[in-house]
Amino acid sequence: MPTQHNMSHLPFGDHKNAPWYGKDILSVKQFGRENLEYIFAVSHEMHDMVDHIGTFDLLKGKILANLFYEPSTRTSSSFTAAMERLGGSVIPINDVKYSSVAKGENLADTVRTLECYADVIVIRHPEVGSAAIAAKAARKPVINAGDGIGEHPTQALLDAFTIREELGHLDGLTITLLGDLKHGRTVHSLARLLSLYKVKLNYVAPDILRMPAELIEELKAKKIEQTEYSGLETCLPQTDVLYVTRVQKERFTDEAVYESVKGAFVIDPKVLKAAKERMIVMHPLPRVGEITMEVDDDPRAAYFRQMEYGLYVRMALLAMVLGKA
Ligand code: NCD
Image 1 (spheres, rainbow, N blue to C red):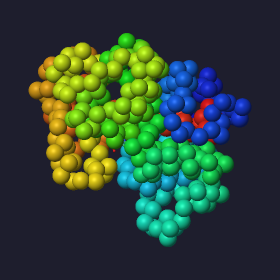
Image 2: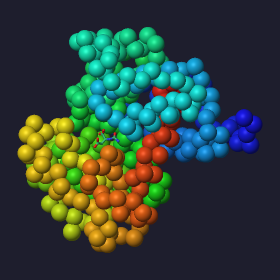
Image 3: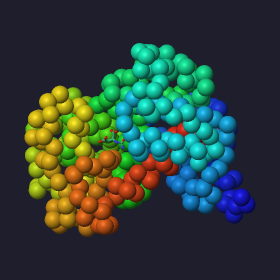
């Protein structure tokens, strides 16, 4: 399709010497502020390109293996869309029941198989450290799309990009993380990533779902101001970003314990009356009652925009590890 869009100024093309070429993305610990600035810039360009020309052939002929051992809607389909918008294609393994995993194949062998057919592997797995095991077995780049309660680095990158696009900057913000801070891999990755900026972090969780002490210590060593609260009342009026999370049912061994905390916090229009006029409400989604649907029409509700930003960030990351950005 003919286009008016001028691609010549963009940082796209062959960059085999680029720092991210062939690299795995396993943890947000791999990223510094400069990397983030770069990822934000490329993601922004990807957004522009999708708006102007929809699909373009930056990764033509490249193949992504999308290996999901846990349920996913957004992460899996946005990686697929990202690859296809860049002209590449995808081997989807969303239901390991029907793959050799069901016959007892180990993760390393599965990954070694997939890399014979694909140029990059995206993996989600219930065990902490599984993406690192996959990366060790593979020569091709592996991207961690969630390893149990460990990390979810691409989500944290898209969360940071969302804050940047919505509020213009990250330094100086007060960010309140709410919900299941114990099991939520998205909050673990996001808190670590935000520690690159001058932010204040508030943690609001039921007592048994508090932020892991080791993570609090890790961020304390980086001089991040962190405060724990048992409710939103005191901290909501100062909050610039309210990051709501789902209580992670699949991580509980006792259903009764899950039932006792699942409805601990519900954000509805009444709660948001106490919030700033210029602030955003985020959620990695899926939500299961933590944010009522009446909030969706509030301009501060950023969670649907957030999942769209995920497409652009994942396009940027794929282009980077495949040596095209
Ligand atoms: C999150 C996840 O899988 O960790 N979802 C996502 O990737 N967007 C959050 C969740 O499942 O609650």
